[in-house]
Amino acid sequence: MITGELKSQVDKIWDVFASGGVANPISVIEQFTFLLFIRRLDERQLNDENNANLLGTELEVKIFTPEQKALRWHSFKNVDPQTMLDLFTRPMVDGMSVFEHMKTAGKDGGVFAEFLSKATFIITSPRLLDQVVQLIGQINMEDRDTKGDLYEYMLGKIAAAGRNGQFRTPRHIIKMMVELTQPQKEDVICDPSSGTSGFLVGASEYYREHHSDWFLEKRFAEHFDNAMFHGIEIDDTMIRIGAMNLQLHGVEGPNLIKDNALGEPMAHLRNEYSLVLANPPFKGALDYDAVEGSILKTVKSKKTELLFLGLMLRMLKTGGRCAVIVPDGVLFGSSKAHKQIRQEIIEKHKLECVISMPSGVFKPYAGVSTAVLIFTKTGSGGTDKVWFYDMEADGYSLDDKRSEVKENDIPDILERYHNLGNETERARTDKSFLVPLNEIQANDWDLSINRYKEIVYEEIEYAAPSEIIGEIETLDKERTDALNALKEMLG
Image (tube, rainbow, N blue to C red; front, side, top):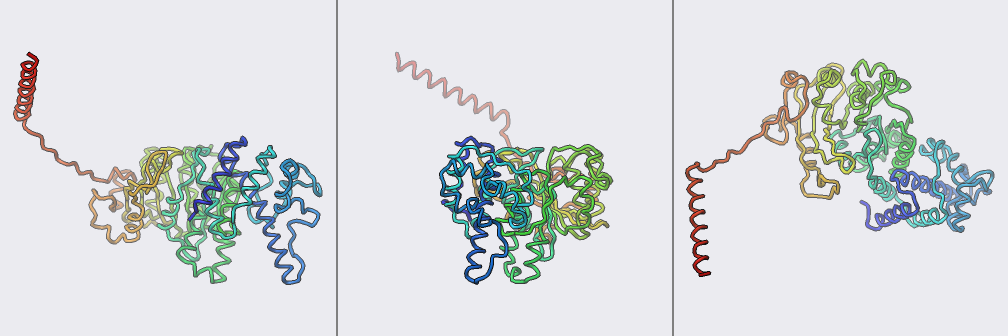
């Protein structure tokens, strides 16, 4: 849980960037991430140096040589602002600047360092750099929870829509989807449009919250660190932010790929993953020649929201589960491609549930209506009945402010989904109900909840017209009598 003090520190950093001319939220987070990484590099070597001194051994890995002392956080944070900026931007030590050294840290910096080749340092003001460095230096980042909460709070300050319909998924929606799928010990988890890696972080936190004892097992700990988490992201900035998010949450060796997940280079990713968690781009479009062929065989479309569903089916192992956010149009679209992908999931695999979410969930980014689909790849069908839930509240107001409110359907969703045996007798007028396969087939594979939900209209009884006329005449007489009495008083 993030503290008020930590929020205040992040808010100050955000305000300093804004007053220094860096106002774009993504740019702020990226530059903040670079500085955080530079601090972490120095702290890592300081820790290794202390351990080596205690043991009387040589330092095995040197991120910084003795000659590069001026490039280290604990050293440059004490120099004057202009010298600090020069150290960041000019090759002053061994032909390197602080920033260039960061980009060449390689494996010693973890997965984040793998995606730094195109990184750009945009802070040009000595005063701004000095202020931000001093503020970051004041943050206590000794434990994993604090580091993770710090970064999540920073990411939560993104208030502008992403490109190509990409929006940061609210943390509580991620948590709901993770708890619906209940990640298992041997799972290999993927987000093919990973962005800030929120879903992968959410899954990692699920293990720590529900299965902390598993981390005592060497096999699970190694799997968690090196083989469990996979993400694909096409944007250079976002994959760096996602890598740092995972590392700060204690996932040191995630497998991140910088590429177009729908393209031919990713064709080898077949039957790889046992759990996919994703919120792929909406409203995007790709030419057919930019999409890997097997996906087009599953769904012949240029729409990214449909193509990603085909991709997920290809990526999942048989028996693998998927929880994915889709725009409402996917549920009821009448095009051949819309019907094709719905039929594919329902008829050839096992669609388990459709959770219809209110349109305000993604505000202030957008008011788009969305739903969560959960399905299992079987290759042999298995859909018998599909569980529908009409979410009306998610614990936050559905306006741009998204303030916390009491109304929240998420606990009820989790309770009902994990006890589907109790859902068989629910009426179509309830928040949730089951719909048999043959009814969905008869409705052209339509998955819109409004197609199946029954609305009860309250009968309102009105008085007879003669009675209403009588009441009007009585009121009219009372008004006339009052007006005549007033005239008499006035003489």
